[in-house]
Image (tube, rainbow, N blue to C red):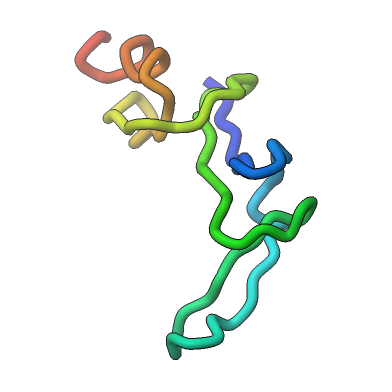
Length: 85
């Protein structure tokens, strides 16, 4: 199974890869950073998407699967979870 590593902005719906996410030093908390959407520049609005290639749903859970732990939507948790093999 191919895996994707993408994030979706809950404000504007933009989908991006980790390399595209904007990062900056947190203005109030030392040793922390804020992350923002590269499209609308909203801070802390990015949600991890299901890792199953081609799925556009936001990840809601994770499950042990062949090849390691899979962060996914509920539908794919049932389909690819180790307990279902």
